[in-house]
Image 1 (cartoon, rainbow, N blue to C red):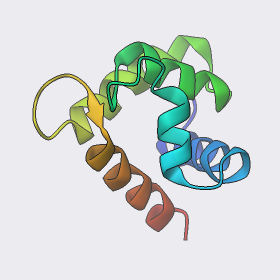
Image 2: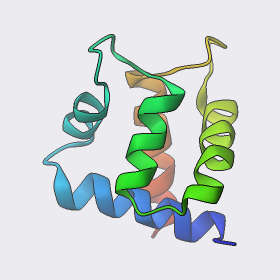
Image 3: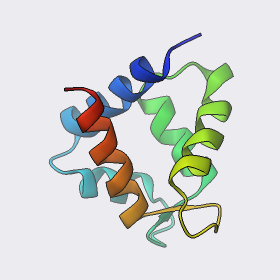
Image 4: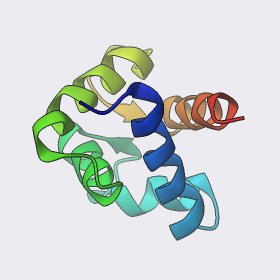
Length: 92
């Protein structure tokens, strides 16, 4: 099974290589434009990052549990920005 570090590295690669800014990535995956990423939208991001289908659901749940500070079950822009900052910090 992929390690947390390798999963976060893959997410970082998608965000930095395919988008000019983290906000561009957020907006791309926010398909319904509500400024929040749903579980389905996070799964799409992880799929783009080539995270194995078996663990995508687990990783999505852990991401929401770890970064959803307001408890609505979604990741808003502020929460996403915090996650990206942690991913970048962890890769250095």
